[in-house]
Length: 238
Image 1 (cartoon, one colour):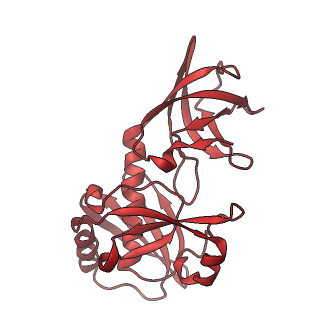
Image 2: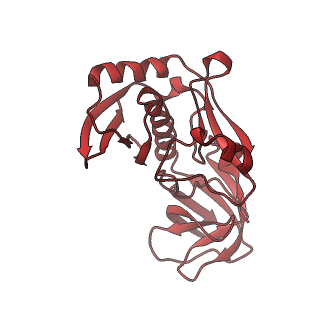
Image 3: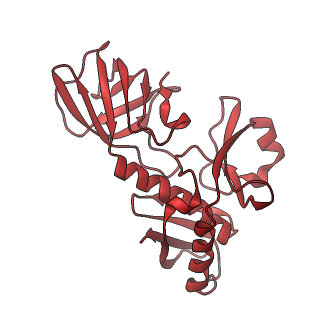
């Protein structure tokens, strides 16, 4: 089981750890990590590992068995031995971009309150696909509503509920294509705003900025028709 340091502190850029295993494919398992594993539309983190006598560039992180996280090197090379103490360093600018875009997409789901059929997150742009047979209203108006939520500088926090509580509140799940992971007994919720100013609450395992103001100005770059029922809305940092 890998301790997920990114869960308790998404702003942590580095950490020491111990190598607990190596996969047949050349992946590295640590006892704890700052690397977010690919999932929910968010890419796995990249960065580097340094240990006595070696260093390695990490291309991405993926989920392994159970609660394990596997770090995938960018190219074949010498791996740290099991038991080695290593320093891990994130490609922070890339991760921070993912955090800003991921939170921005939550805001997009507020501005367009329709079921989400897919999505993708990049470091400078992202998109959501909506169950939206008809084209949305004026793009400039949507963009203005989105940036208004950004400038309100609302806090972004987390909460946890049981799987039974989620079953009793199915409307919390906005995504039709990705369901919250089950089996651990509880589900993580991401909340935007507090009290009467709360604007969004939904299950999510990704990393987010601490306040919406940190996202910065957004542009809706295009709205595309994707099939009879779907529209794809892409936004970008400016």
